[in-house]
Length: 97
View 1 (cartoon, rainbow, N blue to C red):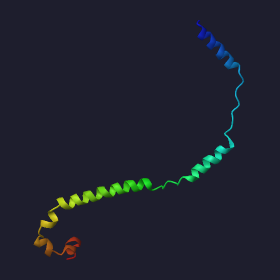
View 2: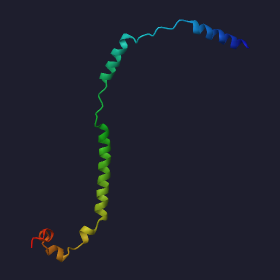
View 3: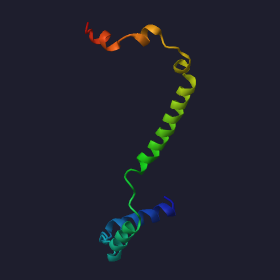
View 4: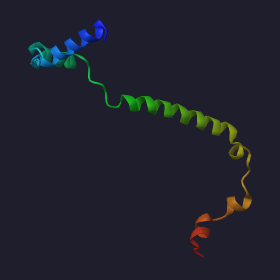
């Protein structure tokens, strides 16, 4: 056994025999400081996360709506069918004849 191992063995044996240290409580000023720091910062808004996602969703909806309006040419170029334009839709659907 080398000198380091012997010294280590002696040190660990003495450490096992030493009395257990008493647990110290936190200093009295610590609680006051924690509470003061908590109240000094503004409270986070609960809807802040939703605002970010809502804005992104709005941008996506506007982009998709614009793309749909640009790519949809059936409304602007289609001519109404005479049969459909002159038909009494309510009577046809409810069969009131």
